[in-house]
Image (tube, rainbow, N blue to C red; front, side, top):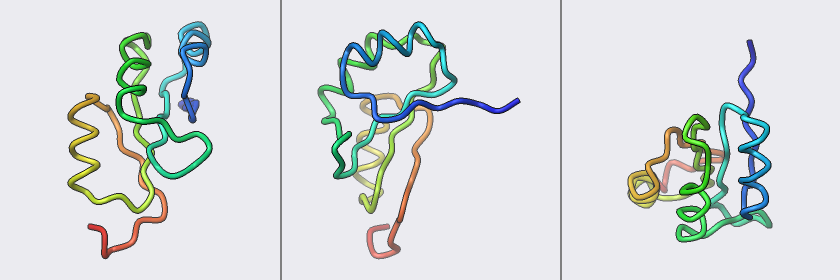
Length: 89
């Protein structure tokens, strides 16, 4: 069976919708994007997210130290890396 991730969560309305749909994963974008969310907002959203929905951080060319900080602070279940460049590792 395929797993489902809904990405680009930025608003409390998004979280409410996810809590109704119950996807497997909710994605929070920390890369420069129109869907980017800051850490404090992500924390507030995650506090209201159904505990059965796994939390994914989406990163592009971010330093691993920063990814670890965000992942630990938000207690992310998964980190998704896109377009990583070795110089940032």
